[in-house]
Amino acid sequence: MLDAVLAFFERRIAPGARHDDDHALALAGCALLFEMVRIDADDQPVEREVARRVAVTHLGLAEGDIDEILVLAERQAAHATDYYQFTR
Image (cartoon, rainbow, N blue to C red; front, side, top):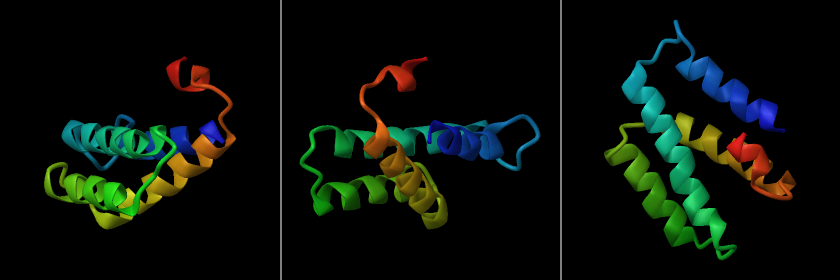
């Protein structure tokens, strides 16, 4: 499962990818925003909406990128038993 997340970022932030460093940083920031929403196990729709709005207005991400990050993050979190795999 972690392979899908890594592949997403490699496609977008690897040397020669179509996006620049600022976009790569925005993608990583978006992933962290949604992890903050999810981490307390009380995922509220309003929290997701605020995180989405921040990702669009402050990080400048497209809705499609945000949707893909959400799907990948949710899949990864659903199969995680601890945080070790995220800190390697």
